[in-house]
Amino acid sequence: MPTLAVLFFGYACCYCHRADLSALAPLWAGDPGAAAMSRALPDIASLGMLVYGLGKMAGGMLADRFGGRRLFVAALCGATIAEFSASRCETPVTFALCRVCGMAALSLAWPSVGKVASESTPVARLGTAMMILSQSYLLGDATVRALLAAVVANGGGPVDVLGTASAGLALGAVVVGLGLFCTRPRDGASRDTQSALVRANPATMRSLLRPMVWMALMNVSLVFVRESLSLWTPFLLVDLCAMPASSAVRASALLPLASAAGALLSGPFGDRGARGLLRATFAPALLGALLLLVLAGAGRDAGPWFVIAALAATSACLAMPLTLGSGVLPLRAGAGRSATMLGFVDGTGSLGAVLAGGGLARVLSAAGTGGAFVALAVTAALASLFAVAASRGKRT
Image 1 (spheres, helix red, strand yellow):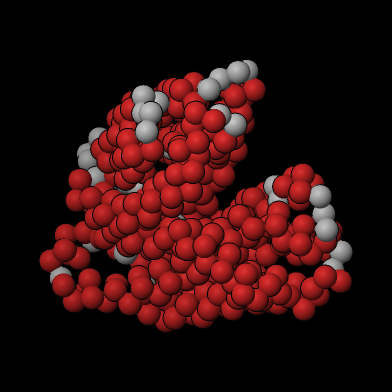
Image 2 (cartoon, rainbow, N blue to C red):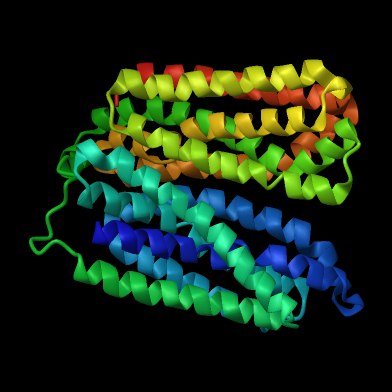
């Protein structure tokens, strides 16, 4: 439990870097002298997410090679340096360089968290442990956004925002470094006892490839739908229900809350057998697809509360397979290469966030709101089929 608490706090601190753009965007938009930074911000954010997704794949292999404890501390230290350096940047190019370096460092964090959790948690409780840790990014994101909003409300500028964020990252690095050192097993033993066997047996690694690919496809599909809804829900509410923009933005806050509830529901299924895990991935993804089809059929006749409730229910459904797919499923299937598999699956999912904004924007312009809901429904249905294929590829 102490190790999980340290991991929880440390990963929540990662959002001091992940969430800083939400506070910088309005500051730069309102400053004529920062017009270049404001124009470059979408491209900088997309580039950072691309590096983040690819970095997770490398981070998993590094965690298996060097250990998750060292790598997690290194990730936080690297992000601290990048965030502090960004506060001194005055041009989009230098800021983008710091952003890319920071996101590359943070991409090592989640595979490291999974590696340490798999080593320090009994196998029968790994699902519950990863469910708890998955809440760290939800709470961390909300807490950091509130903290940075308070900095802005008190008259802080971009330098103050980035300075506060770098201080939070530094605090996380210190707590994680000391906490993981104090909770390190005395005998240095790892619960991942199959590591040497897997490295020595190429056939075993080939047997992991197929389920890893299916899990990755499931994750990227789910992340695409989730991030599309997160980004476009205010627009959809305005377009379908003629809701005022301010009300639509406030209503969209229900989606992450519903996702958090769905993630919590995944915990009891995470510690069950392969059949229970399949039900917790296939069925919720399919139900989410059906809800999106209902929204597509309802069109402009749907009332605002019906649309909001359906979108929240969809978010809760998709959060279950996404939480399992980004945590316990790859860790259990990966045996001695648990972090490698987690990094690949979760990193591929992060690439779905890069595709979400522009991808759905093109569908909206070509087919309207109804077509967008149909496209998201088809993507969620594909995720349910990928879940079935992953379960058949290797029982977890």
